[in-house]
Length: 581
Image (cartoon, rainbow, N blue to C red; front, side, top):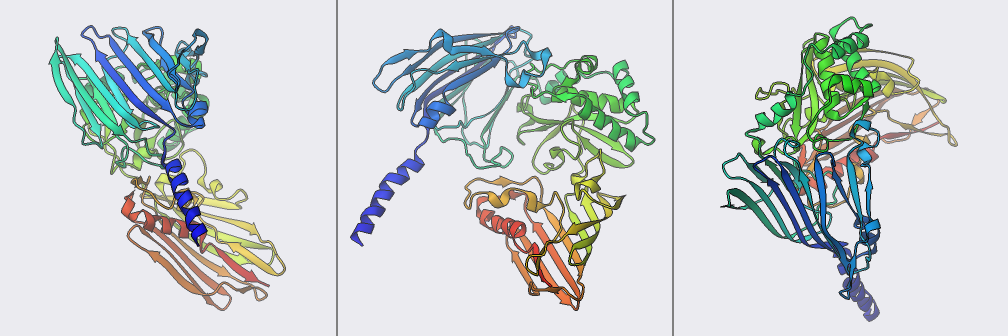
């Protein structure tokens, strides 16, 4: 017993500090943003980072990446060196400053002038401290305003963090630190207004999946010197292609030549923009908030998200379908502090056949913007200042199956009532259920589409036993990864939607096959949701009902264990029937 106590004591002393220790620590981090009266801007970055682990030294912090536009911006590196644990200074050699093309601009020739300076940190060892100090100077007129959106937490803790904003006194300046109670110091000196946040002992950013600003777990800094959010949006709306653009009209006619209804035109145009134009990963910020014309985008056969959204809306309008571009934001607080950098997603709203469509060039179904209507803020770009109304699309699933079992296969007749969030606009949804469907048709109603189809599933005989897996929706909640998340969580979990699913099965057995799964009714019903299954048998007929309800979209830590128990039960239990010949 004494020996066991000694071992446990050793483990508690050795393992706990090891698991709690960070890979690295910023002893100092300073960022200063200056917007000068002539329209030029300066961004100065200064860090001191101490390395504690081999992973931090060899992977996480071995290099620093600085993206800039040399046509309008100048990069000045004031100092770059490493101080080793014994105090030895190792200056970064010239060949450790490597200039490359940013990865996101690799397939976008129009943006191949962008540069990424890779600073390779040399002389690293455990206990060494990296020092880096540089400035990016933007010429007057390149950037329309001071426009900042960045998460405050870093991948490692920060001992001393200073953020300073400088703008001409009397000029507009909006700022906010979302999900934080820290207030800045504000002063005026030499005709400039200074706003400074000083943060001590900032913990590292959470590594929990889906820790978000909208969920309340990420501190986000937003700064804008636009006169208002509407003025920021006008900068983009002024670059949108006019409705009478000849390129848009020609492309629209080409894409819709076989379409007979407005709905078919919408599907054809969305499919054309997605399939015929590659999507560049460059953000609005990385392109200096500038868009190329529809003609340039068409000739190059690729576009940024903003450029493809412009093409999509323009082609729809050219086809006589009224469409507007809107923006969804990363945070949901002061809209005027949100310039253009804070836009999380751009999408197109179109109304056809008494139905609202939410379109993006990134996917063929409802945009996430439709799912976050209870949390995010939206604004119109086509008509800055006008209200944006999103009809939240349904995410309910209601499936009815009639199944005939034989020793070799299961013949399945299905009626699938599917919420509009899951319906791709540009292909037959039935094919997503099974690759060998025999027949299928769809019937649209308000908020849902009902599909009827039939298929067959081969059954495998294992010494007279057959395991039959109950079919379900291919995009149902059991397909998500929540069952694999950690058992404990200190952050909120913002789900994309509150799930509500119902599956009803009527299964007919032949005389030579019996059900060995016992009749039962089992349920988990708690503060976060409910997972219920009922199995009944009457002669050769089996009736199975499975229902799921996730009651909350924002799962707080107090409800996380309850949510996880429902998610695991729904994904892993009560999905198979044991049959025997």
